[in-house]
Amino acid sequence: MSTNRRLVMFSDDAALTATLRDCIRQKRALDLDVHERLMSQMNGSAVPLAEAGDVILFKAGRNPESEIGAVRALRRTVGAKRAILAFADEDLSLAAIRGLTAAGVSEVIPYPAPLAELSERIDHWTREPEYPVPALRRPETRLGRVISVAQARGGLGATTLAVNLAHRLMDPHGLISKKRNYRVALVDFDLQFGAVASFLDIEPTSALYRLAAGDVVPDATYLDQALVEHGSGLHVLTAPDTLCPLDALDPEQAAAIIDNLRAEFDFVVVDLPRGLAGWMPAVIDRTDRMLLLSDTTVPCIRQARRLVQLFTEEALNLDIEIVVSRETRPLIAKRHHTEAERVLERPFRHWLPLDAKACRTAADSGKPLAAAAGRSSLSRGIDGIARGLIKEIKARDTAGLVDTSR
Ligand SMILES: Nc1ncnc2c1ncn2[C@@H]1O[C@H](COP(=O)(O)OP(=O)(O)O)[C@@H](O)[C@H]1O
Ligand SMILES: [Mg+2]
Image (cartoon, rainbow, N blue to C red; front, side, top):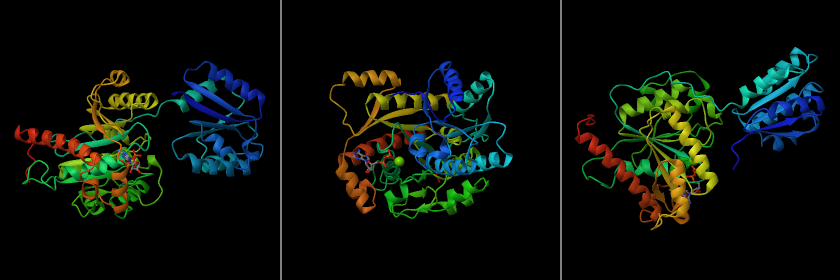
């Protein structure tokens, strides 16, 4: 898998294309696709081509009206995170620039321009996403443990793990101790594709959408009202019930959500989205244990490695454990496994077996695995992870580090 960032360009201007090629040639880790047609002539067929790009560029100005329409369609498809850049000569009217920007162009770059200037703008827009330091600091007394679930690729079972881990952490069946039940909150931070509510057959709420749409920093009361209590006793903050961009939350809001929940619950389980957003460092910074799902294929391990690097750059001592999904731990470690563990600089700590039948049964009944297919190997695998986490919290409690009695 190439980790290069890809630029996709629509332009029939040979000089512009040549300049851009010169510019890219001097840089590493960038690929450029050029389509020698204008956006305005493509009647929507630009969208599927443009989707391949991390940054989308086009020559603007020949037909601003239809370019604005094309940009609008493109922006709808690629979401908020990707840059769309327009090259415009000085003839482009201010109204057209305003129209393009309103439709979703990230920057209108004047052209012709000196190579150095173009180069600088390309650098700016192809830089890895930035992770601002969260404004709120960790409170002195640490209460609930924050467990974040991330994934090296989609569809591995991150949400399945988050939901069922949260459910098992409540210890409703006396998993470890018959006396003690833990209070658990589950947060679906997959703002765009959150599936936690449907896994648990509950109605998603507008709470996160309302936060994303405004700039309120939520307090304990807001969160109390925002949580949905599942029949099992699990408290859930669902993903928004309305479509909303991944970066709609801001770091202070994400921080306040975690801090307030952590003050009230023994465990806060977070289902992270697959993409990256500016609020994520606030969550990562507060995470006590990150569970990162991967499979053992080379592309997936590479992606896992990138995430490990990214996350540990954010939080130096972040405790990341690798969860191998859809595979059973082999009796004797295979060569490519040891190699992957070396690349990741950590062992394959947990293994969750392939178990489509159990997932299906749980999904069809809208119940957690433990309730729908408690004896399944997958359910037992997740139990094992929950058990380990409960042991840790108990050890911490008896060491008297934190008083969690309430
Ligand atoms: N261990 C597993 N074995 C088989 N199917 C699984 C497993 N874990 C999850 N699935 C199924 O894969 C699909 C994606 O799972 P999900 O948890 O939503 O993945 P993610 O959140 O990583 O995208 C779902 O249909 C789920 O039931
Ligand atoms: Mg998911």
